[in-house]
Image (cartoon, rainbow over all chains, first blue to last red; front, side):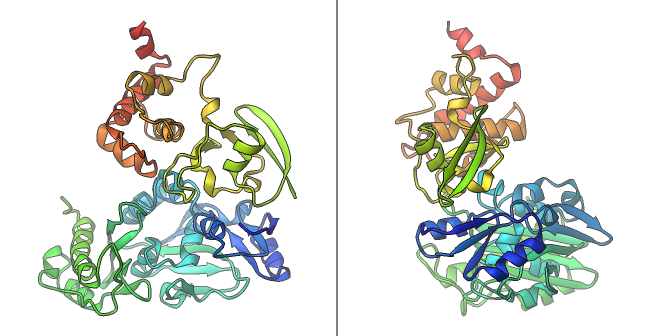
Length: 269
Length: 166
C-alpha cells in the first residue's frame, strides 16, 4: 500500500470540505473493496477521508412508504433490521447474503453502491425497487445513478448520504453465488409495486446492472414463476469469464428470475 | 504518522503508527500478538479474524487508525485465568484442527457465531456461517462438530467437555 494522509471527519459536511481541499483523495467507507485495491497498489490515493465517524450517515428509518438507509449502515445492520425485515424482507435477505458474516460487519450500502461492482448485490435491489440515491448535492434515481461498469453519476467530491427504497407489494431476490468470492455470478431482484413490475439483473451484464424488459412484460400478465416459462435471455452483452461463459450466465438469469418470483410470491421451496 | 488508542484484550494501548498500518499488522508487529494470522491477505480466508467491539471482522482489511477508540479481542484474549475458553476446549476435544493455521480465525468466527445466533447451532447453520473461514487442510468436519459442542458449552458457562474428560 502506498502512503496516504488519513482524515476522519465527524459529519458529511466536514467530509465534503476535506474532499474539496485534498487533491486525489478517496472516500473510505467499510473499506472492503478500497483497501484490497490499495494493497494491490491498483489505487494510490494521496488522502483517505474515512466516513466511519459521521453519525449523520448511519441508521435505518421508515419514512412513510419508504425505508431510508444511511450510507454508512453495514450489511449486517440492514440484514438484522426489524424495520427492513418487516417492510422489504427481500432487501434484508439480500444484505444477509453479501460476502460472509465478517465482511457484512464492515461493508456498507453506500460503499457498495458507489463502487457499482458489476457483480454486487445492492445495485439489483436499487434498480428493481426504484430506489433513490441521495447525495450531499442532489437526488438520483437508480437508473440515473448506475451508468456503467464501476461507473456512477457521482461527481468529484460528491458523497452518498442515504438510499431511499419505496416499499414494494412483492419483492424477491435470488442469486447464484461464486463459491469463492461470494459475489453474484447472476443475481435477479424482482419487485412489484402497484401495477409496475421490475426485474433487475446483476452479475451478468457487461455494463453492470440492467433491467430485463421481456420478463417484466411476462410477469405483468401474471406475477408467477410460470409466467417466465420458456423465456430466455440473450447471451449478447452478457459477461463471460473462467467461472461461466455468456450462454451459461444467460441461462442462469432465467433460472434466478423464476426463483426470485417464487420467493416474492411465497412459493419458494 | 497518526496516533491510535485501542483496548486490546482488556488492556489500553496507544501508539504512533503510519496510517497505512493494517489492524493485523498492528496486532502482530507492534503488540506481538501473533495468534492472529495472515492467510490470503485478500479478506477471503478468515485467518485474521478478531472481534472489533464484539463483532468478528477481517483485520487484514481494516486500518488500525480507522478503529481508534475501539475494543479489540484477539485469540490471545479468549482464555481466562489460564483456563481455555469453552470454544478452544471444544476444538481441542473434537480435534477441530489439523495444521492449525486457520484455527485462531475459526475460533473467533465460532464465538462470533454464538454471539449472533445463540448456543444451539445445527450443522447447516455452522457450515453457512463459516463462509468466511477457509481451512487449507479441508478439515471442516471436526471444526463443525467442535463449534456445535463449544456453542453448547458456552451456554452452560463452563467447559463440561474438559470436566468429562478428566
